Image 1 (cartoon, helix red, strand yellow):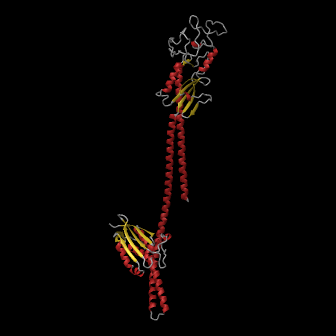
Image 2: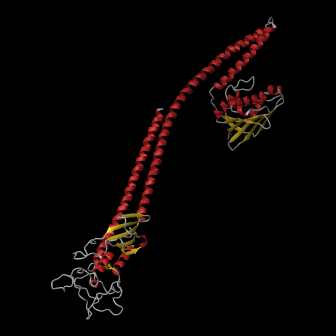
Image 3: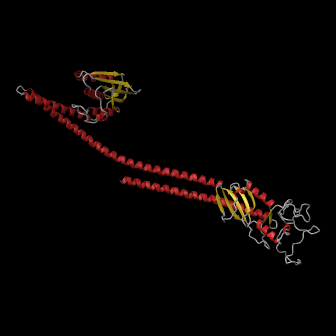
Length: 527
């Protein structure tokens, strides 16, 4: 009971340790996944910072020309040698206005989703969408010191004929001015051309005080920060353009392939650790269980050894008692024979004396067989010829065989085996006398020796008697089991004892068409 309880405690401790390992691996996996997500977010912020720097570099008077911005964005998305995107998997970039509508989009635009839910991250399938603010986007439209970033769409021709007035697309940059639009940046537009006078020069901006002409020192309002080519637009159109084309947000669509690869690789690693931890825990549990069973078997072995020693002592005592009992029986048998031979003995006395002698012989025979059964079997192996030993036993049983007119044949290969000659003769005698008692008058008994392999022989003793029922084929080798009235039940038990001492095997089998077979196997052939 205590051993079983210790097994349960050990199993509980091992299961708890395994669960701790599994929990630790789950926590570590979640940390790795969180770190991979954080790394992807950091790359998105780096890309956003790069784009902010690019927009500042390309901005000219608060505006960025789309024809210059799109190649930069395309290069950022498609150039996989860029350290910012080659591991992050940038799929698409979109600049958003105040309404969340795209102003400029490049890459896999079908992955872009209008931002209306206020989410800053959206993990969907194999990609993630980041919505980030653009630096310097929240500004006033007029009179601001940090003007808003407006993306100007491509221009169409200002007129159907030759351009008139100043051509801003061909103006040389002023000293110190950078990122000025070059030739071709105004090749097409959706906006009307700036107004000019009769001389072909751009007209001044409209009055800003209800019709009063501007005076010296006045600062234009409503269009002071407009590019020159937009000063001819009405205030309403200009504000609509700003609302539509002013950049306020940035959408980055990035592939999660690297993130998922890191997560899957780490997951497999954690699963393998958990699996081997479970195998280790199971192995430790089995080892503990085997140790417990080994200890239990050792205890049983010690008890069995003590019981065996006790049985040996009882066996020796019983054998000594049987031997000492046989001497008085011989004395009783002799006295009964003397009484039966007296001349003056009455016939009734002689008959009773004969009965005493017969019963004494039976008890003496049983005691002799018991002594033989209880005697320790010490095998002294010598070379014994089986055919010759069998023929000698047949001659010994000549009187019993002639009395029942039995036919006995000793056939087979002339093989010699390694065995204790005296014990082998006792085996052959007991098996042949058992067959002699089993068969009827005129029966047939056959002893056959044959080679089973290069080093082993088989011995069979067959008869044509009634045979042994299937239920009794194992019982016949147990002590005191007999089906004969005159049998003691120890003959076959002694045979099995000698067979086991030699390392052989014996079996009782049916003989066709009738009778029984006693087969001895694994007899070692002498070289």
